[in-house]
Image (tube, rainbow, N blue to C red; front, top):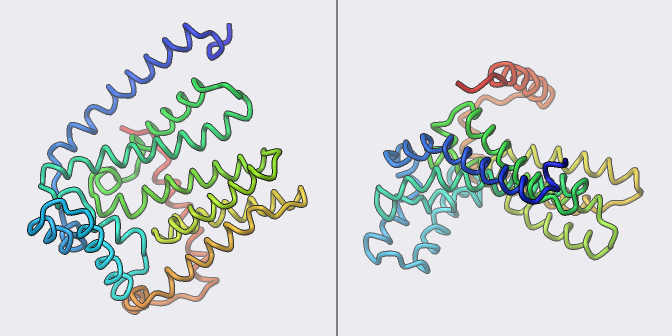
Length: 289
């Protein structure tokens, strides 16, 4: 009997899996109820909180204040032109009790990215396989949440989590588009995936440099893979991602922030990055407690 083709058994397994996943996540979400803002949460939300204090949830003014915050940090601290906007919209501007939304939002983003990637990859083997996709997405979400090196900053601290996790989820969706682009048979589908990939690269390019570099590695690998088929569809997203990284890295704010760090040559930086990556994998690749 094929577990995923038997409708009754598959439905029962899906329900048990979903229920088990929710039970395992209960402690994560219960802790979130006691979560409160800290450190940079206040710095980035000064203008948006002031708008709420004066006018309530006036979304036109809120979005304008978030855009002003974004522009200020782009020119004075760091070129994360999407990240700063998100940080200005931290939930506690509506009241401290809303800060708990942070954890629910992050877990939802991880699951959404995992679902998109699993649907693209598993769908190649199971065209109608919704159950295997759900299984893989839930397992991936569970692994990320339970095995995260620092759950405090990755799940509970809005300013830390929103600098990385949304862009990590977008990068998974970008990888999903590249898979669909590679397996697509129609030019229209590949064109859609290319345009959507360019849009995602604009958003990813406004996030943290670590995730941008991950996206660039995926895109570079895709270009090589597509070249074997004498196709160049991923080149456009790669160019867009490089252009956005350039805007990010050359912003006035980034130059101000980098002036406080000691500089290293390019070869030295590459060697150090590989050494630190190896040390991090040794330290992080263990079983969650």
